Image (cartoon, rainbow, N blue to C red):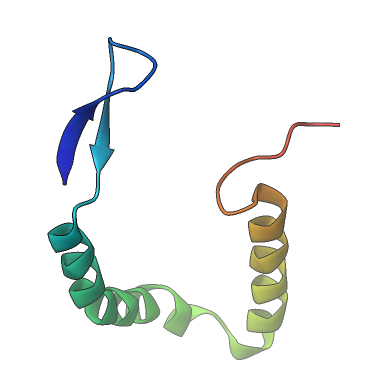
Length: 72
């Protein structure tokens, strides 16, 4: 990560992911996913997983990858 000045607001900064940082994220991904499975998914009854997956997929679509749509 590196810190850069915000392009439009001189009061702020932005965190920028470097190539080395992205490699570190990719390297950590398998153990992170395994930990999430052990801590969360393995405790959810199998019959509930399809409904939870559908709800999370709908939420992801509604928020467009984290960017909320304006309210109607």
